[in-house]
Length: 228
Length: 258
Image 1 (tube, one colour):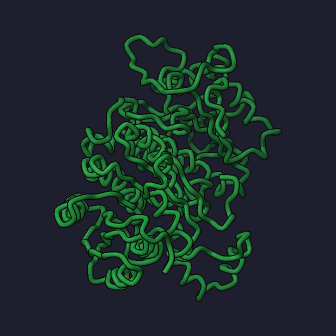
Image 2 (tube, rainbow over the protein chains, first blue to last red; image 1 turned 135 degrees about the vertical axis):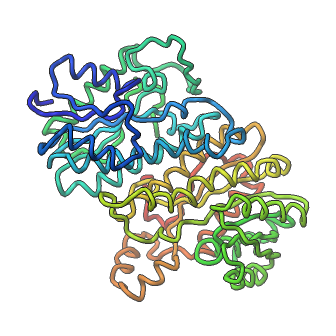
Image 3 (tube, rainbow over the protein chains, first blue to last red; image 1 turned 180 degrees about the vertical axis):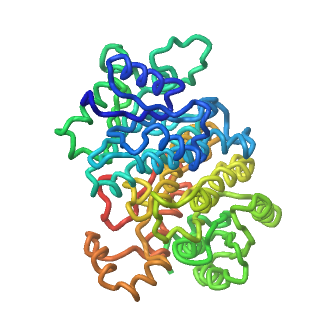
């Protein structure tokens, strides 16, 4: 990314969003982050926060990696109360809408929006119905806004990583319970840092050469799923 | 008469949003397959034509008050079918928000509009599943969601509609895995069909409808009963016993890369 450009990272309080923000900051990129205490479904608060961070300026890149942690708890849907379903599935959908809508207001023409999501929805995972539902919703919401914002030369793309990488970023597993996602075999490529993989793709999408890529899904799981 | 005669003989099916359009057509197709069809509607007085269509096709219609945003109503509708007919073999969730054909101004709208879509298409998808689960487990039945091609490719004009329809596809894939051990199958259909909104468009913007039809290799929009109904019945029947977690795009070839 151009060093003078600024990047808004939403969802930078934990997991891969935290690691991406940290990595970009370390290498000297100009980063704008929302407070971790901000309710991402509160459009007014998110909008006000962005205006105070950006002032009269704009941001060139938006990285959105925000899934509510309750979505990572494995449970059969019949065991969920309505409020548990709402928090695990619908809260993240509302967050994505508000984040995209409010980010649009501070995004420069020609800007790049990159959503980071876990790969779970491609195959579906028992016990993670709310998460799979939310991820597919957000992925297609991204496509819809890619169509809407194309006239301003804004691109909107999605990068998917393995669930563990999404939840942890650069962090060790520690006490975090990462649900098991059934996949056939091991990744085709040798293990490496998923954060490095994602940063590489973000940088690629930020180049002028990637200006024609929008509404796309890039799966950075080192060849684990290989979606049809 | 259309559909798959006898394929659902004696089976009990609930179709939500069955007062008109695709819901009515699918209900009628289940009727032609011999099913007892619960016609789930918000206003029972608006369901007479659907009931007549099911009966004319050879099925047994049962009009049920079933606003799917009301947990008690959907629970009662399911319980009434089980009480009166002893079983529930399939639930087809077709209902959508009354605003589903409206354009959404994504950049300026509020969460209230999102809620209109999500309450019907996302939350009710979950709630109907939970409410129907013990009965579908007993019958080793099927849960079918009427999704949309918009839920796969994203819609500039209808970003909320396309997003909530995508939600159903993610839901289907995951729940198919979760309910597989119970032998309950979970699928969706993504139809391109004549709807009340398109009927209006035919009058107000006939050229736009012609343009849409021109993109369909088979040269026309689908008929809810004869084009969308039979694949929906098939997916809920024993003939699809090894099909789960899938979205069947029924679009006359309009969408070939989804």
